[in-house]
Image (cartoon, rainbow, N blue to C red; front, side):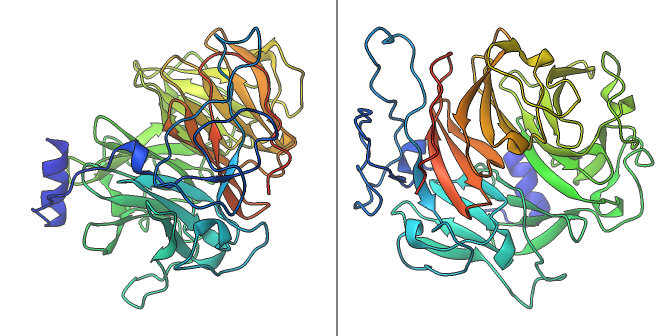
Length: 398
């Protein structure tokens, strides 16, 4: 089993706790519903937290009962200004500085407070704390954790530090271990696999875990995607990208394709790998047979209206992607300050418009996600819809 092998490798053989259900996540502190009919959430920022984050879609408007749509956003953490404060108190009153990563783990939310060189935690009661911070035992010292991903089975937490060129792991005893980076070998030189510490990374950003026991890493600086096998001594090899910046290779092997600034990598429910290329203004898919193809964006920066096929719709610096069970994709089109949805039929529509800095969207369930806004130094919970519906304007975020 993957869990057993991973824990043995670390040397920690006993773990008795199990993951909490999704409903134990802390509740957001949302805006007043303004007549939107949202259910099951407090009505305003500052309301007493409720110890659950159960998906709660907005009540349908007349004539749209069969078309669920995202509900109003709620602020989970951050005050809209950069700073460091709030540990021990309600997370929605805790200050962050340029947060760049978020994940859920066993009923809690972990946030990369990048500007403060820390990882913060929101517990199931909605309280903030520092989960990982400055510590002389951490070598090299933390410089700015960025993307973060957790494995509920093993309890391991992985995060990237682009300035150090490292991917690091926090084990269940709190030790920080280098998983990938610090060596001299490129993804091409790695061939069929090398020790992760022999690999050289330029600017690792995006992270994902897949059901097969692999950690996927998007290196924006080297224009490649690495994969680290957690079940075989954490050996690493290239998954996609020739190392040359570009948009070539669609229809062929992903390892030979030119990528351009990959900053996010995610695994779909069907086992395909999605790669977001910020500099390439597109999203591509690596099929289970290893072939790469474009799924959104033309490769040129721009902005197009709703209703066009995603392959013909321009993006501007996309930074993350989220895949739902039915094939719906959500993209943070950061340069256009919007969130867009690609329906299973390939049609793209705007979901949230005029968001100041939508940088990262990660799933909680098929009905709810977490959205980071580094420009406002805060984190929000938003509702997702697997089917096409009206756009939701979240410009009034507190």
